[in-house]
Length: 457
Image 1 (cartoon, rainbow, N blue to C red):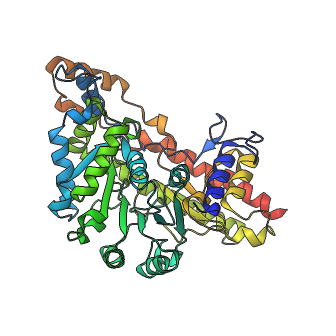
Image 2: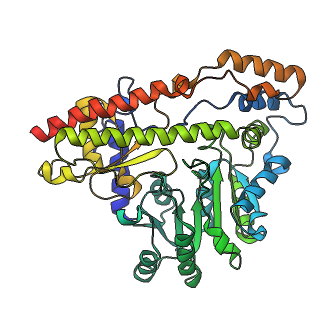
């Protein structure tokens, strides 16, 4: 484990909690009730009411019981959808047909590190990854290196950068996040070039694609690297989950595909550590992927709108300050996070603000506003991530009476009624206006005021 990475992770956790380096709370943190958090990674909206009713029905399904082990049962319809979804990515059936389900995508990373225990693997991850990867690798005492990527390529890893890392650092395992944590999507050409390097040097690849399905452009589908590994099936695993595009993070269902041998190994480890996924969770996910296309589309449109709100707010802040204090060259095309570059502050504050952690601590103290330090996502300099999707989440809980009626109808007729897809026709703004307002005010007022004061001193 790189000391630099772990230090960044530890600092980010401390700052977001309002703690000093000793772990003592000394200023406001993201979880405080009076702090406006643009750091939380919750969903965009309450799950669609049909998904909730599917869970209620699953609890009452006398074919199953909450004490049944998932490894001894199957949800055939969901598994068929998963296989077909991987095939739609262009992944050959020799990989797409080999699937494993487990407790969310995080359990797969645990299984990966378990699988490689004692084998002296050397892992590489490019910038814009999920911060807990640092902690997981540290727990297993594994050697994780970050390839700090460049803005010129939207912080995506290039084949040249990968080749250099392989040569200089003897990398044999790659973690690739696609889409990235800051919303970049790899192109087919980029993935093909990376694949050639990986195949040439026999690198094992694990692709985290949990943000696939959140693309802002309804016509765009995240390309998958596995399509280039048909002749090397056990060298790649593609991971997805229900957490982001269905807002079911706490339901904990993830899935993966790959070569027969590697998937069998991961299945064995996952089932030993987490032998059960409830049929309730599986039925909720199944209903979501089969029926909730409009719900998903609306949420993705809202995410795109919020990215535009951030971009417009930053433009006005810079104009007001008379300098390009914030850089938004790197814009998301998917996902729930927007990277803001404050490198300007490093010189402007004479080194008082040098990192994302420094800036986040300042904003918490001065404005009780929480952004996420990008230090622990594999970025250098003074950068932060705005987690925009869940701002105002509780304001999307508008259909409780309708949800109860749909659930009661479901119990009466023994299936989720078609009325679950015909919720009262509200405007997008009914669900999302409050969140948009919080986001806009937090940036145009709280962030702007904090920056103006900082630059005066």
